[in-house]
View 1 (cartoon, one colour):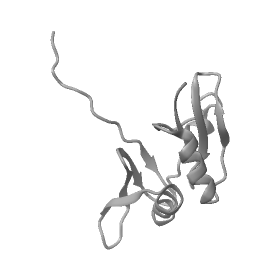
View 2 (view 1 turned 180 degrees about the horizontal axis):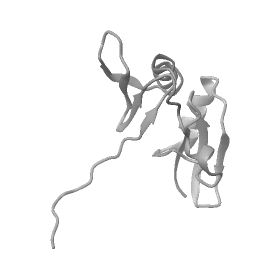
View 3 (view 1 turned 45 degrees about the horizontal axis):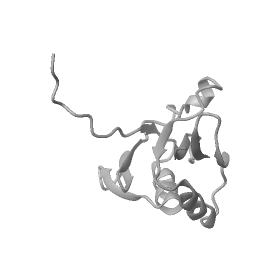
Length: 131
């Protein structure tokens, strides 16, 4: 059976503890921009983006907390892998913004040139490319 549909992108959806603080982290520290706030006057949902990457952020209630993958199992260390054309340049940009890295820039055992950082809610983002 032929299928003409093409998958274009995937956007991670993160439950966050504090929407305003999460938006601030992505915008101020990672250079994203806020594309959408719902509702605009007292938002519980946002979309932030940079280039072709979008991340959906949602605050549900005070008793629903973020659950990054690594908190469920040590082998599930990433919540998102972001393909980057130049990991070295991005690492230097993030260093200049004073970010703390979960894993520094390196050539990894799994064939990547990559680095990792945690966002405000503990989600691990890996930025890299194949060697």
